Amino acid sequence: MAFCWTSLHVKDLEESLKFYREIVGLRENRRFEAGPDTEIAFLGEGETKVELICSRENREINMGQDISLGFTVKSVDEMMNFVKSKGIKIQSGPFQPNPHTRFFFVLDPNGLKIQFIENL
Image 1 (cartoon, rainbow, N blue to C red):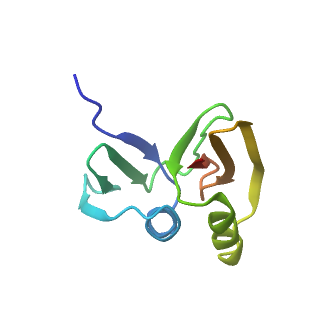
Image 2 (image 1 turned 90 degrees about the horizontal axis):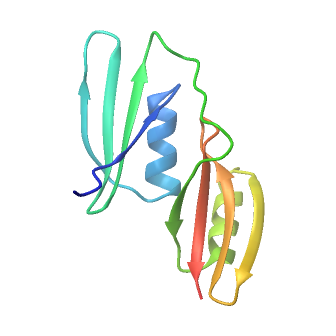
């Protein structure tokens, strides 16, 4: 068995695509209409794939507080400066729970926690 992707229901597809392309760095690789009121976009490659689903009928999105997506970065400090320059608030951190890992969290446009992790 292999992991395929993470599916996220989003309020605004364009806003979410911009976040995952420009901030997270995922490349959009597929986008299509999935019926008269739903559009789907896939981003990423290899083992890192995200599916964004936007339904014009369902604008109430509930992400939950206890889930996050984690992405590795070269430098937590550089990434924190980058997200701040894009007007994105640091939700929490940075944290360093051990000598080998440092990370912080931001929220995506739908309120999902995104963790940026530096392996030291």
